[in-house]
Image 1 (cartoon, rainbow, N blue to C red):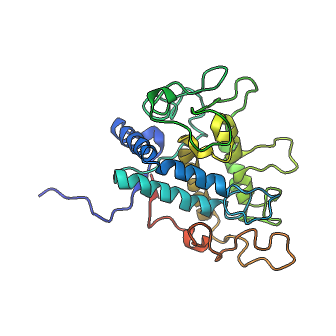
Image 2: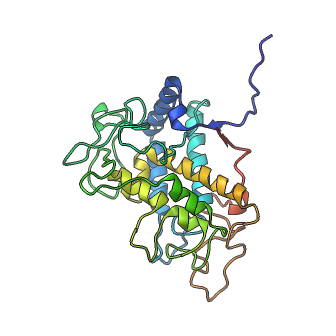
Image 3: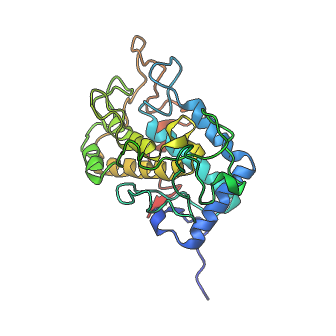
Amino acid sequence: MAETEPKNRVPVRKNQRDLTAAEKKRLVDAVLELKRRGEYDEFVRMHGDFYVTDGELRPRAAHMTPSFFPWHRRYLLEFERALQRIDDRVTVPYWDWTRDASPTSAPWTDDLLGGTGRPGDRRVTSGPFAYATGGWTINSRVADGRYLTRDLGRPADPLTLPTADDVARAMTEREYDTPPWDSTARGGFRNAMEGWAAGSPERWRTHNRVHRWVGGLMLGATSPNDPVFWLHHAFIDLLWDRWRRAHPESGYRPGTALPRGDRQHRRVFALDEPLPPWDVPPSELMDHSRWYRYA
């Protein structure tokens, strides 16, 4: 009798370059169906709502904050679960931009994400998310236009993707995060990887630099309008996991709620403070192994 796959298997997130043709098609089909149902745009709006900058007085859960990693982990997990309600064989792959660093390499193929935008309006005209196919209309945005835009590599002012050396430098950070717990933090892995380069002539690094390299709709708070967002953040999630394994002695910071008088009081989230909109604290999002693993 042939062995059957266990029902409680942990899904595997693969490098997108290793996806089979069938896996790519299932992923694309699930994303397009999620868009057709209106659920995809809800994810876009959520990211826009939680993109809170240093200067705003409301709580910052998603960006420029220690909870950058756990917030996006839960966000990606919710997105992946939505896809799996359509096709339970689908997982979110990751894009290792240190290896696939060209506008003509994976994942910019017609059977996955399509390519860069055309000159002038930067409109994407190839692949399953091109406006002309009728399945990908931009509804949640911070700019005009109903179509997906990209400017891979920014030819008019060339930009390169982060390298393996850039990632290795971030990995040497021994602290998870440091005061003042925002985009100006000069130490810590969180900001080294998120990429707000305070005091540096190179303004955008690592995670932020990838958004800049893709360009178009990946530049704004509603960057999930471009499906590459999920592949990019799956790799960021993987890098966080690698950092935690390399520095088991370095826990999430801040470990306890910041006191009154601290300018970040009730604006950033400590280890056991529930993250909106799920009311799940970072402490419950440190280990992903019960939900998925990486190939």
